[in-house]
Image (cartoon, rainbow, N blue to C red):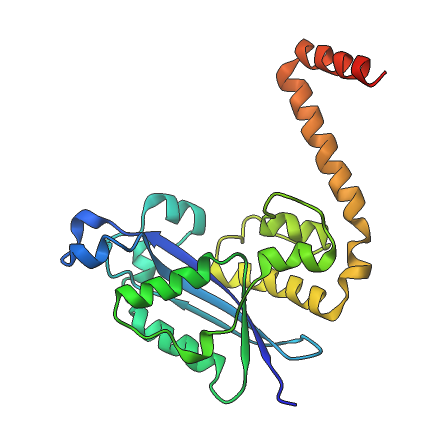
Amino acid sequence: MIDTNHIVLDFEMNPVHHDRSRNTERRGRLQSEIIEIGAVKLSDEVYEKMDEFSILVKPQFNDRIEPKITSLTGISYEDVTDAVCYEEAVAAFSEWIGYGEPARLYSWSTSDFSQICHECEEKNIPVPANMGDWVDFQRMFPQETGLHIERQLSLEYAAELAGVDFDEKSAHRALYDARITAELVAIVLSGEYRERMKNVTGVLQKTIETSTASMAEKLGPKYAELMARFAEKKS
């Protein structure tokens, strides 16, 4: 049986400025460009980290990194001025994934898969054949762990539920987010989540208590009145 490499990835993106494009027709359909790719390669069956990948990408359709993106990621235009173009970055990433053995890609939501397909299309670049097997791990995580949560989980909250350390100051960089996601992937695929997530009830209860306290603080006397009415209806 051929082993499958598990590739866990994350992108950081920068908005496109439509009014500065030399090719407004094509650029008008592209909302963002990838400016950083980060990925972790896990082995099959034991799910140990084999390698990491990180690369910055110079945007083609914006002559700056938007301030909100710099504030969120710490990436400035100076960081990407001498970076490779998108086509080179995708080629390097595809080569790192490897062509000789199957690979399955995991990302936190489907937005990364949509982005790479859309951006390749708009920039006339074929999507590499070894990037076809893609998993939405944001959806897979609650399904596999048996969490009954209707809202979409953030990566930080999922990490808290699974007992994975999460550093907010390091978040929103592609490689760091890929590392956190990779830890979650390994925990789920190995079945370790059964032991790890014994603290889920406590975490959820803490969230509910925090939300309740926040509501009470905001509503003041009205909150007490609402709770009293709720108690009357129950009785």
